[in-house]
Amino acid sequence: MTGEASVAAGSTIDALGQFELHPVLGHLGEALRFSQSPLFMLIAVAIVLVFLYVGMRPAAVVPGRLQAAAEISYDFVHDLAVSTIGENGATFFPFVFAIFFFILAGNYLGLLPFSFTYTSHIAVTFGLAIMVFVISILASIRFQGVGFLKHFLPAGTPVWLAPLLVPIELISFLSRPVSLSIRLFANMVAGHVLLEVFAGFTIMLAGLGAFGHVLAIAPIAINVALTALELLVGVLQAYVFAILTCIYLREAVAH
Amino acid sequence: MYRTPRLFLFAAPLAAVPGRAVAAGMPQLNFHDPLLIGQVVWGAVIFGGFYLGLSRFALPRVERVLTNRRTRIQSDLDVARKAKAEADRASAELLSARHEAAEQARAHVERIQSEARANADAHAAETAKRLETEIANAETRITQSREQALSSLSEIATSTAQDLVSRLIGTQDEQSVASAVKRVSA
Image (cartoon, rainbow over all chains, first blue to last red; front, side):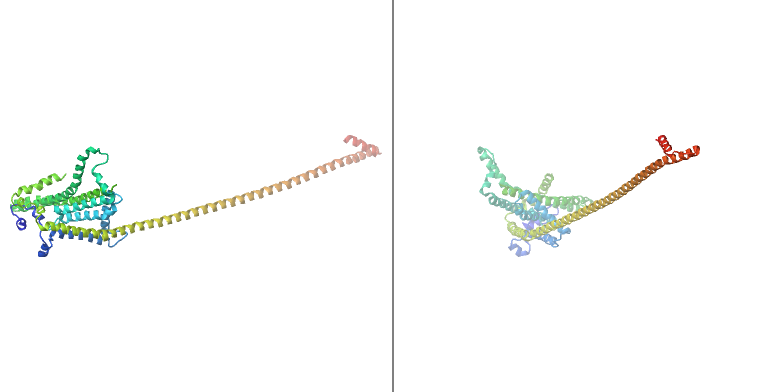
């Protein structure tokens, strides 16, 4: 199936082939189930860590450009975590930082040609969302005990409404990881499919001769604009994921 | 806002390529692929490592630099504030010293002036007193000389009258002439 779908079709556009997983490092990768997705996760993580390491190496009182960038990323996520979660925000700050930059680096790395967008895989985004979900439940138990269950029946509600409200609250609570993961996954898939489709249009138009060569400029221009849009979407989705994580954690630590 | 056209365009290639793409489906949903689950396990490991690297090394380093800067700026501000307070105090001292010196100088000038005035007054008073006594002396002297002159006037008048009488009548009665002169002049 892998080989079949990856064939670049001349007359059709294979928009989904880019999401296929292939083992890297030959048989070793196959044995370790190591595809290009974890490879790009490693690259993304390495880029972020190297950025922070090299940026903060001068440790100057008056920062240079790279150090200022590293400090701004720190301050940005720190302010986000502390202002949203509250006084316990500093505890969860490294986690929120890791989430934000794992997604941001994945989104941006995927925009480079010949790269792979691991955030376009529902398994990855759902894994991240489930992690946030489990951690927020653990934080609820840690900070509020079993009493956090009373959030499923908002204070001041008549008791006879409980059979109706508790299932609703429960469903909305359980749908959090689903909406969190699908939002990121769908945005990334949609953006990359669009890029692929318009790139395919360019190739198809180029096959029409001189006239097609001129027309083929249009999808290229659209792809340039789409790339700019994807740069916006990439940071926006990382921010949305991070701020929703913060909001869930605030509910978990609130008394 | 942009999602509606995007979803439409997302659906477009699926409709445009009915054969293979739909049959193959989305690779993300092919849960039989061991690589799909493999990436989740690898992702968990990599994310865990990322989290540890951030929370143990990378982020505390940034935190340290930011804290250092904050304390450095704070201490610099404190030093500057202290220096300013000292400068203010020195300037206030200088001002008060100058004020004091001016006051002293003014008092000095005033004292010298009043002393000079008092000296002049005393001198004038002394002179006036001396002049007054001199005037008084002169007046008594004048009075004395007038009285002297007046008292010698009757003598002169008597002797002149005696001379006249003796010349006129050849004899003279000194007693009667003198009493006559006295009678006239009285």
